[in-house]
Amino acid sequence: MSSSMIRCILLISSLMATVHVVVVAASFSIVDVSSSSAVGDPGMKRDGLRVAFEAWNFCNEVGTEAPLMGSPRAADCFDISSGEEGYHLSHKVTEHDNKLGVGDSFKGLDPKALHDPDLYAAEKELYLGNLCQVTKHKNDTTPWQFWMIMLKNGNYDTTSGLCPENGKPAPPFAPGRFPCFGSGCMNQPILVHQPTSITGSDSSPVMVGWFNGTYDDISSSSSASGNISYYEVTWQKKVGVGSWEFKHILRTSKNYPWLMLYLRADATKGFSGGYHYDTRGMLKILPESPNFKVKLRLDIKKGGGSKSQFYLIDMGSCWKNNGEPCDGDTSTDITRYSEMIINPETAAWCAPSALSNCPPYHITPNNTKIYRNDTARFPYGAYHYYCAPGNAQHLEKPYSTCDPYSNPQAQELVQLLPHPIWAEYGYPTKQGDGWEGDARTWELDVGGLSSRLYFYQDPGTKPAKRIWTSLDTGTEIFVSDKDEEAEWTVSDFDVIIT
Picture 1 (tube, one colour):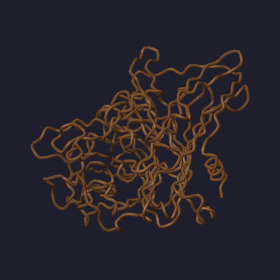
Picture 2: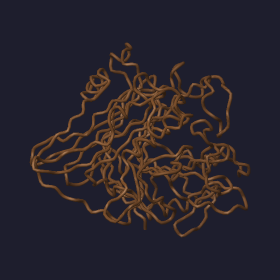
Picture 3: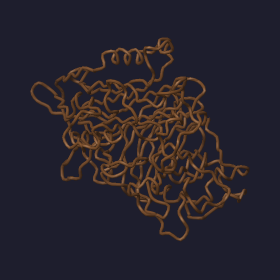
Picture 4: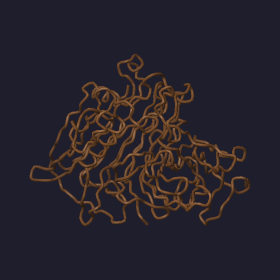
């Protein structure tokens, strides 16, 4: 069993991490903030970190809280100051705040949410956002809250009737289509938090904290042999120097073969990608195609196996099939995603013999349309999979529709693969670019590319404004038939308005 797993289990046994505030002596510097950045913490360089945690079940709800864990929302937010005795971290969120769960009241809680796990989690995110919110830095008074760590369990108990179908209530149906070991498979994880503290020497102080845990029952016999799911995100940074480094570990198990872990820059208000609740996040300016880029450094140590759909960048938004913005009506709102998958073991499902897995057309950088039946020119290898919204009324045959259950509303996916056609946007051009052992700093013209991707819209309607409310990186280990492990580090993340 790994040292990180042992650390997790020891911490889980206590069900509470100990808070330490340490002061050391060293020099102090202020990091300049770029006015062109859409995020509150450009490049992750701000010493006073703001980071939060959210866990979801299959259809982006909570369902049932894990025993003694409270609602699966938590945050680690602090300011740093210096004095004669060194540095001091002033935490904004207590462990009592992080353990709040259904039945626990807090300031601003809607009484309707007090005993509803789904509504309670949404309200708790707003509460934590208020505690963490930064309202002014230098001349910028646009409020922002935190980077978001998202963990999701892909198990779906189809006999439960918990998830809607394309945004509308759906009855239970026979098991087998989705992974589930039986009753309770959609559970929330154990969450352990080590609040950020300062370690290291007086001359080189380092700030370190983490969230980790498991979905599995650690008292079971299979867990005793080490075959349990595990997640961990550790953040660390030298005081006054460089970027925060977010180190991720994600491990699947027999009972939990489909897990997702992302680091997200979400909207500071309104709906983030995939949700129908008011959210909090890091995007103080919502980027709109084509006028933005994303910069980040990604170092993948372990990719997570052949089923790991590792997203160099994943962008999420929401608009209706008639092009109008989403308004919270899940029966007509559509989540739109585009994801660049860089696992070289991920093949193109789009092919001349499988046109239903391709978008109807591809648009080149010079705005030339190439239709999918143009076998001489269409870049089939650039697309892993395209699927249309399940409630679209005017689809061009042949077509595939997206999974109708895994979001609270219908969804549309455009999944990309490394290919020379993406070179102009700074994206990887061949399999293996940026993969294990090939750490890179990427500057991606996400705005330019996203303005040319195909997304479904009803004929004759005004084109939707492509405004992106979530930008993230991480992996989705998609129903592996064996235990898998992924390990990677993200740093220097920024969204630049061009």
